[in-house]
Amino acid sequence: MSKLPLPLRDLVEQLAGFPGVGPKSALRMAMTMLKWPREKTRNLGQSVLDLRDKLCICSGCAGLADNDPCEICSDPTREDDKLCVVSEWDSLLIMEESGFFRGRYLVLGGLLSPLDGIDSGSLEFERLRKILGGGQVKELILALGTTLESETTGSYIKNLLAREFPELTLTRLAQGIPLGSDLKFMDKETLRQSMRYRQSI
Image 1 (cartoon, helix red, strand yellow):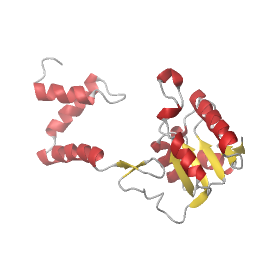
Image 2 (cartoon, rainbow, N blue to C red):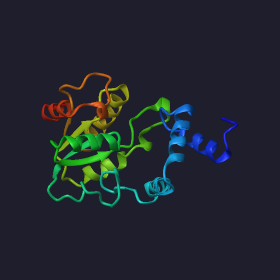
Image 3 (cartoon, one colour):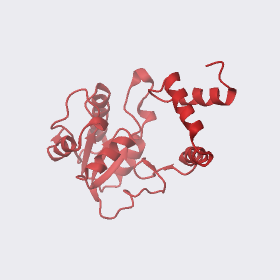
């Protein structure tokens, strides 16, 4: 790679920083971009800039959005008494694509993992407290998956509710989700069954 022209080498190094992209794949991507018309490469560069400049974190659900509040949080037809907690924004997207849940969401921004330095202060637990403190939520649904980190996070939320919001019903997705799996990799029917047959905790 050291013999590549400097602009090409810089791009390859940047592309190789993406998950699952090695130096050879990055070079192929860069060479493909060189064959594009100039306008297409400009549009790609502008899209990357827009990604940073035009997206925001929704003040309601902590999901990515181009407006605040996001489309889901500003929808008056959603059920305010049900709050579904997911770990990441892509899990929210999967739930929405399935089309069976009409409540509200909260994106935690990850899962508790002390070994990776992710503690309760790194996640959206204060936002969760604020939402629950509003008094509209009657059922809190944990859609966190079934990994060890998911279980740890679920236990933390259960203890939080027991101390501060004992009147709330706490449920989690159960039916059809295998142990050790991540929610974002589930198919729509499995998710639908999991939501329909959710269990009390």
